[in-house]
Length: 391
Image 1 (cartoon, rainbow, N blue to C red):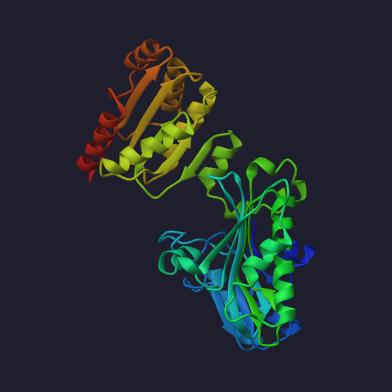
Image 2: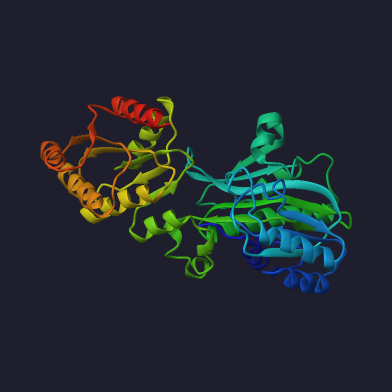
């Protein structure tokens, strides 16, 4: 689950992480009023949307008067925001954050994430703030510093010193003290709220010597939401893809992608492998859909219906290895979906495992038009061929 910047900053303040003063606005008039009430000029008007690269997409504007704030907010709210993460169609912006401007002297990057290879949190710090950390790591990896945290011991003062004293040149003693305290506070926040990511980019020192989190990003591990009831209430349903939201209602692991090959698979590993072979065959997956080992006939039906609702889908690949999910259950779910929704795109099926013969008989005895693949590689080739024929 993702939080908006303004939501993350409210939580930051509770953990002693200083942020600029700001107000949320849902219209140009609201932005005008907010700018009048905040210290300025200048002010910054920022799109509140779950997508990175807002600045490059025109979703962050520096303004010098309340009237400019009104105009900027209206333009952001009235037009889809297009970034690398949204795709060419962009995303609708429902609200903006109006903040007081700050005079930035230095910018840093600070984040806490989970390093899965070591199964522990890692604090990442760089004095090349304001840039995407991936770009910094690729161009100047020596500027990306890490401190791995023992979950039992927690964040230790010496780790903060190791990161802060690597800054060249060193900030003043007061700013340095605040920076080190802030690192510990961000780690405490990360653990307390079951985060998968807590990021500040940029973390700045102003010309007046203040340390501020100018931006804020928080992602919450969905598996921890049962413990995070207050956080769960902050979830903005408007930011969710409609098909992903529908899939979540039926406990389906579905992520919409930008390709044209719909895929239904059981098991996350097999789903990833299926997407890989689709790409190797020269096509692009339209979704990640793991119906899971314990999927029922109804879940399979819903999954196929969701795939068919994506207008970009030009062929469907069903790749099932029957274990807990039996092949006959999958076959009946496919037929049930076919009865409710006309399948007008090529359908390729690859079944193996428990009750595979029964599953094949169910499909073969139906009126459903489909092709059978003997293995995953052949299935990907068949799907790609069908898409090229319809191009």
